Amino acid sequence: MKSEDELQQDKARELFEIHSTYVYRIALLLTRSRTMADDAVQETFLRVFQKYHTYDGSRDIRPWLYRITVNVTRNLLRKQKWLFFLREVPEEGRVESLEDVMVQNEQDQQLWRVIGKLSSKQKEIVVLHYYAELKLHEIASILGIPLGTCKSRLNNSLEALRRKWREGQDMAEDEGGYYIGEKKNGEFT
Image (tube, rainbow, N blue to C red; front, side, top):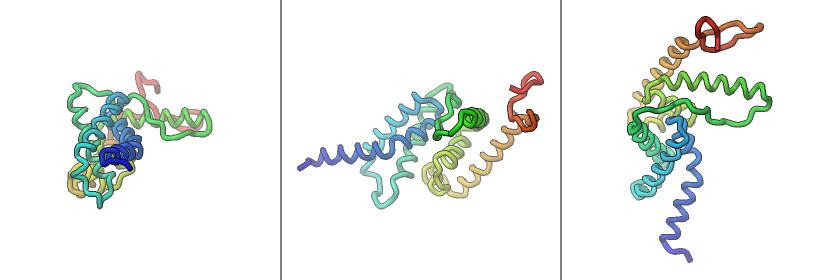
C-alpha cells in the first residue's frame, strides 16, 4: 500500500507527463527560446505543485495550468532585457515532400517574423488562440481579462498582424506564380 506522499508524487508525475509537452509548446511559442521555454516549464510545474491545493478539481485543469504558464512566461520575459522571438519555427508535423517542407518552412518563418513584430499582449493572444487552439473564454480566464476585452484584443492583434504583413511583404510574379518575400534594394529575398 502506497503512502500519502507516494500517491501525491504519482499524481504530480502523471500531471507533468500529460501536460508538460503542451506547456512547453506554449512557452516556446511565447518566448521563441528553447532555453527560456525549458525554464518556463520547470517554473510552471513548481508553481503548479505549490499551488495545487488552490485548484478547483471540479473544473478543467487546462485553463488554470495555462494561466500559470502565461504568467511565468511573462515574468521570464520581463526579466530579459532582450528577447529573440524568432529562433526556429516549432515543428507541427511531417509533410510528405521536400518541396512541401521547404515551402511550409519559408511561409512559417515569414509569419513568425511578422508575429515577432507584435506587442507582447498581441503575441500572447494570437499564440494562445491559433497555436494553442484555446477558446476565447479559456484565454480570457487564463489572462484574467473579460471576454469582451479578449475578443477586442484578438481583433486588434489580427489587424496589426495584417498591417505589419502588408508593410513588410511584397508580392511578385515568379514563373507564373507568386512569391511572397521581402524586398531589399529592389530585389526579393
